[in-house]
Length: 139
Image 1: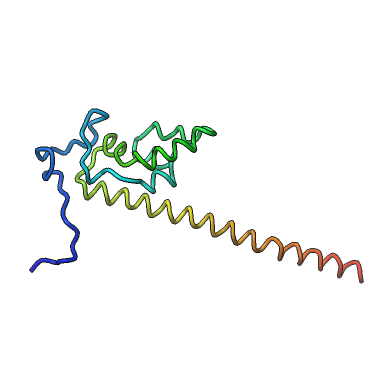
Image 2 (image 1 turned 120 degrees about the vertical axis):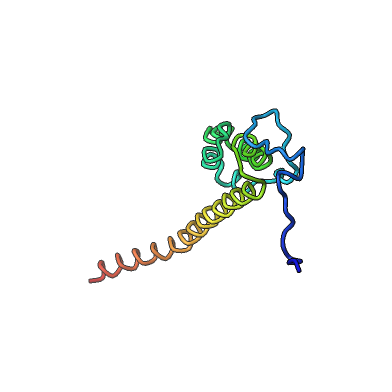
């Protein structure tokens, strides 16, 4: 008996004549399983671009252009990664992109958490230093 909760298989052999066309450049047809939003490309933009050999993503480092490039990478990043890199299968590609998304979220929310912690602790630290100065002056 098979597992009813197992995700369906998306093998390269199931589409387009069974040819794995990853890494074929801009002229290839991208499988439907590859298309979609890329949180890894959106959150880690230029780092993701280097890791996936999508050199246009380095435009994210340019002020003002970077904001638009980040959105573009989120929308088209998965397709560009499929075209620019050779992947073993769609499962392999999705596993790697899921990992990029996971680490992007960890880093993003980690930075937000540190920023919130700093914002909360700053008034406490200022209050501590002002009380310490008052204590020194009263002695």
